[in-house]
Length: 128
Image 1: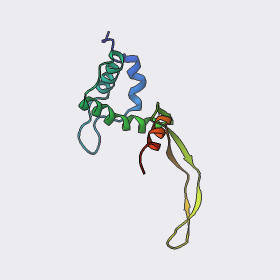
Image 2 (image 1 turned 120 degrees about the vertical axis):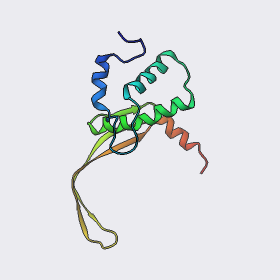
Image 3 (image 1 turned 45 degrees about the vertical axis):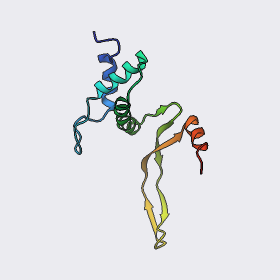
Image 4 (image 1 turned 135 degrees about the horizontal axis):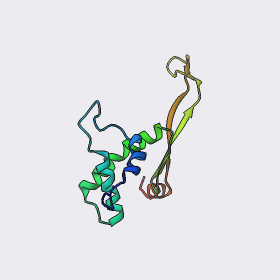
């Protein structure tokens, strides 16, 4: 049995297929996803404050998880920050602004982000 702050094998089997491979075609090798997630779980369960380096590693791992989850048709919500969800854009006819020619745009998948209430409130307090 693993340590109490580590993901179980059953939990990992659910999460692992949602993540990108750790050997990307471009760039360097990514840190092992299970190791990063175990670190997040440990921080949450123990309440130990994270240092700048640890926070940076956690934040750096988030985009890949969000992208993979939304691409698979799921939604991701980070309370107070925002929500990402898949969106289907229907085929339509657009107009090229330079030539005024009609352009057919095919149906495509996209992602929608909705700003969280805490984030929105913080943005309204910023000076213009």
